[in-house]
Structures are given as C-alpha cells and as structure tokens.
Length: 167
Image (cartoon, rainbow, N blue to C red):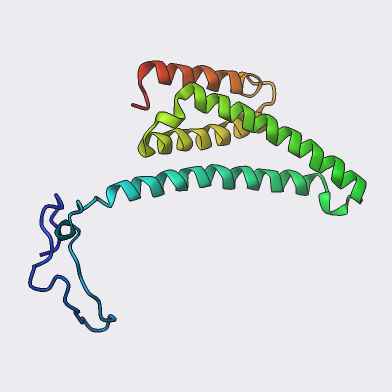
C-alpha cells in the first residue's frame, strides 16, 4: 500500500526492494522509508516552502519590474557611459537603503523566527503594500498614504507583531 494521509502505511512488503515495471514508465525499485528506519515525511512542508519562495520571488519580480520601468523612463539606453554610471550609482544607493529598511522591518516583525506560512503572509502583504503605495502616490503625491506611507506600514507591522498576527 502507498502511504495513507497520516503517512503510517507504506507499500506492500512483497514488492519493496524488487524491481517493478509499470508501462509506460521506466523500471523502478520501490522502497518504504519506514522499512529502512526512517520516518515518512509530509510533502506539506515542501509545499509551504515553495509558497514562501514564490511569495519572496514575486516581491523581487515586482521590484525588478519597477526598476526596469524607471530605467526606461529615465532614457537609460540613450545615456552615455558617464550618465549610466551616475544612474547606476544612484540606483545602487537607493537599493541599499531599501534593503536596510526591509531588513529592519523583517527584524522588527521577527521574520527569521517565522514559519514558512508566516513568511508567505508577510511577503504577500509586503507586495500588496508596495502596489498600493505606488498607486496612492500616482493618484495623489500629496496624499497621506503617499507622504507617510512607509511610516504607516511600519506602525501597521508593529501592531501586527504586537497582536500576534503572524503567529
């Protein structure tokens, strides 16, 4: 038998360790991890890790897309080498400042101690905030959401941690 939903059962001992053939697949030799002294593990942890990695990747993709849009809007391709170097240095400075802010925010939220599910929620919320912040600033650069957006996020994340939002 294959493992049940509790991963308590395994394949039939009569086929364990014996080469099997199921068309159209290649031949294989099934084993049961429990028979070798190991404990079957759930794929749920892998799924959670994949979801967290995807959420983090989505944030990075969004940031990269925004950088590409800004580069295009600045006419980067038409710049000479000196202007490109200056632009790149400015972007690097902004990236370093953003990374420092994000690291501080993650530390304040207890990111390193979070589970994969909690990190997924944090990253998804971060992405949504970035999109909302951009939209608010494009709609009205003088709005509270635009002027104080980062401070509002910092306060919101502080409140979430205090309320046990991620736990």
